[in-house]
Amino acid sequence: MGARQTLEEMAKLAREGIRDQRIRNAAVAITTRGFLNGAGLKQKDFEGEARRLHGFVRDQIRYVRDTDGVELLHDPATVLQVGAGDCDDKAILLAALLGSIGHPTRFVAVAFEPGRFSHVWLQDEINGRWIDLETTEPLPFGRSVPTGGAAALLHHEV
Image (cartoon, rainbow, N blue to C red; front, side):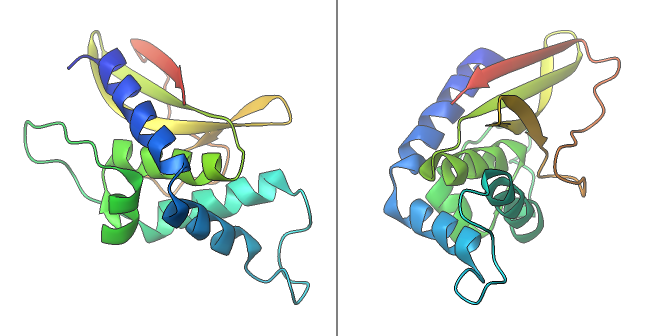
């Protein structure tokens, strides 16, 4: 399967996850923590929602590589239940969590060698800007892996 086909399959899994009540329940629970006692996010703090969900997937879902030589894509409910996945699985889960509470997202795939896409992360559109959400490295909200020297970048909206 080529990079564009993989991104389309990822988007399909994320769109299915957006409609999964387990995914929405998780997104709501994560983003409303502390709200009733005044310690949580304020009403309509969309960036805060993205920060919380990004931090959850980055820090609470463990990075585990695919089977050697086999590209596996997992649905977001499975990734949430198992608590592990690779870059595409974590991006699918984050897209589903964000999408279930109304955030538009897109995947970004990078090839450091011509024709060989090796990594993917998610972007969330907040206030008209696409914000990078890297979940496999300990990078802060808004940062992605360095792409200087990349041979190609592909964007694919969920």
